[in-house]
Image (cartoon, rainbow, N blue to C red; front, side, top):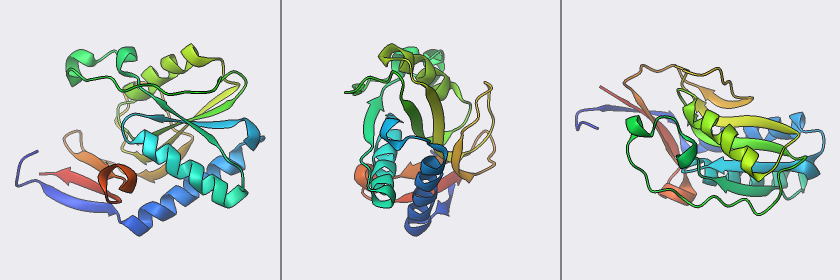
Length: 180
């Protein structure tokens, strides 16, 4: 990132909190049987976002939702373009068979991360339904994937960057748009 890049706050801490509450409410409304609901956060910031959503669902409904963490590094088809990464540890301590799985990620852009996540999920069982929740949808898809739950629709240019900060991971809550 260049030092003269313009940074615009898209979601303040309060707006981010409200957005997470709305996403959690939408997930509850669309899930027939909450006892079968599991959230799978996609590394990196999808994991703390999934945990936030689970806490909010518990606050709203009094039901504890299982949360897993999914690393999709070895399922990507664009490693040559995004560079070498150290894989995180996938942690799914439950069977996904028959479950309603909500994949959770912070930002959807080209859709390649989600395509890889869909491939990875099937190594852990056969869910009855897979849905997608994202905090920010910035457009520019290269694959036909559309989120079921969107916190904020944010049209961007290809060159801009959307940066999500989450308290549990970054020490603060915010969403920023970075561009020239």
